[in-house]
Image (tube, rainbow, N blue to C red; front, side, top):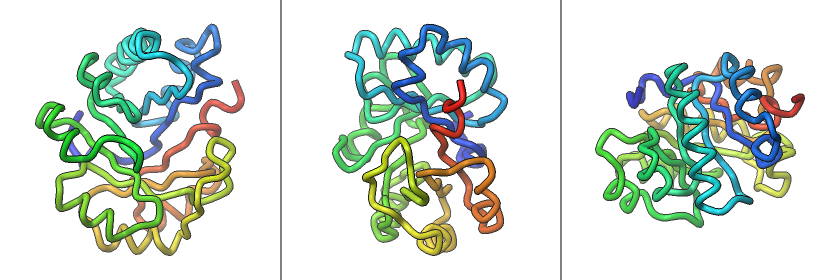
Amino acid sequence: MNSNKKLSGVYAITSDKLLQHDNYLQIIKQKIDKFQILQYRNKSANFADKKIQAIKIQKICKTHNIPLIINDDIKLCQQINACGVHIGDQDKSLAYAKRKLKENSIIGISCYADIKKAQKMQQEGASYVAFGRLYPSITKPQAPQVSLKTIVSARKNLSIPVCAIGGIKFKNITDLQKNNIDLFAMCDAIWGDF
């Protein structure tokens, strides 16, 4: 489950709206056939509540052999023994994550539009790198935009999986697939219609 070769396909990211829904676990179960990886992202709950939610979600992921990645929270990842963590600019460093997590943990890094950063993260042992926002995004409308050309260039210059994020929907992944982009991060496209 931790092999980089399996880091491909639709990469679902939970939304605060989803996680505040009474039936969020049932919704995840209903949608689980739409994605290959799930990132637990909750920006509004405290640590104790996040841990309770993440443990419940992890049980579903294990049943379906779906890697669970924790957004921004290395401690939570450690405590529930999740498959890995995704870290951005304001979070702990890749080196810190590697020290704290198991050797085979997945560690993804947000690189926005910076291919040089992605190359450096690859050298330092990142499992995958993410570029975006590619299209207008409901989840992060203010995020800086990155061109498809930049993501395609990153794919050509990196050996680790490349993830595109931001406004990606099932109807607009064709260009990404044609250019061998590995991962398609989706939030609203997965959960928006519940």
